[in-house]
Amino acid sequence: MTVLSVDIAGIGFWTRGLPSWAAACDYLRNGATDEAAPDKPASRLLAANERRRAPETVAVALEVALAACEAAGVDPATLPSVFVSMHGDLAITDYMCATLTEDPRAISPTKFHNSVHNAAAGYWTIGTGCNQPATALSSGDGTFALGLLEALSQLQSGEPTVLLAAYDGTSTGPLASISSSENLLGGALVLASHAANPVARVQVEFLNTPAPVALGKLAGYVGTNAMAPMLPLFEALASGADEVWLHAGPLQAVHITITRGPLS
Image (cartoon, rainbow, N blue to C red; front, side, top):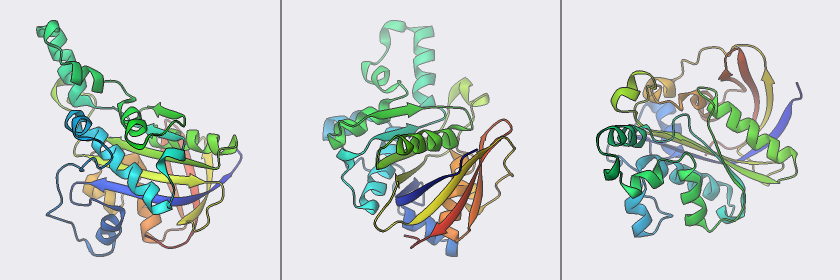
């Protein structure tokens, strides 16, 4: 398959105890976590009303997306975006299923509003005033890799810069037994055909072969989250590795070669 080359212009990262990309890099260097960090991002983009309504999955998606844009020095309103999540918000899905079973007329309009898979993308466009295309995508445990493919496809189609934001939260109720996910995790990349000061340049190849099992330090910290398949790339970017494999689905993998700039 064709090898695609792209610059990583900015990185965003958030999980409990590691509330930024700098914190994630520091954790990989010396094991330090931020015990004073909040359990949920602050949703800086949203007005008070939207901030109260937004679930934590939306909050983490917006936090990492904004952080990546700030790191890249780009205006969020100018970027097409790809928001990816394996589950969306399973806590809300569990609530919806239970309420429809027990008392359908009691469905909360706010929770119904937040149950759609493109909720984070919608809040992003509202918060940033962005009129560019926004894609919401899910593809099982290959979601992050397929989101990367979608972002690369947009770059190949002529977009100069694309935002990729990935996130998942905790699953609850009966769904947790078949769609397990713990903690809150988000990561974002601003990808550009040619960035002025890239964090790294990567060459990406999609292959019909299984990916090696990832056993990195970030996977040990937050590997039970459904978006954990993204972690090998973020760990490779932070640790100085020159290549990484990502799981992309049954018998499918992404091989990424990294030429780096500054870490953070």
